[in-house]
Length: 123
Image: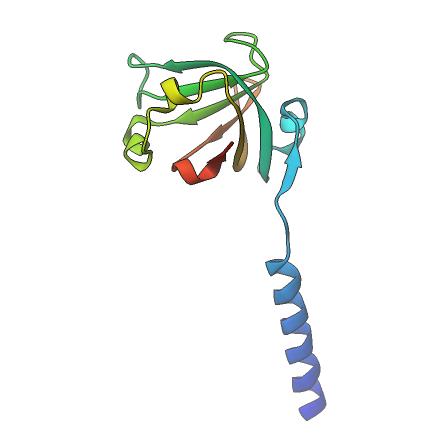
């Protein structure tokens, strides 16, 4: 019985350590479509920013690769989440090379990521 408990404890500790060490991978904007549902980091230049006051949720869009509608990848920051930023992302991030970390989703066949806080962005 003690041996089973010891083995179980060892397995649990090893599995927990393996899970805790799982790193977020860095990918390119072109690879984003292949990582839907995964938490990743993407670094690239923001080609266009746009605050869409007419869309539901009034998102700020950060487009990478090219301006809309030819963007390769989009980051969305919903209006309600702008309180989590010390700056206006649509103004401050335009033209900057940044890295963003979050989960990739698809919207109308294009990869995107939603950001909730400025701490998901670094320059």
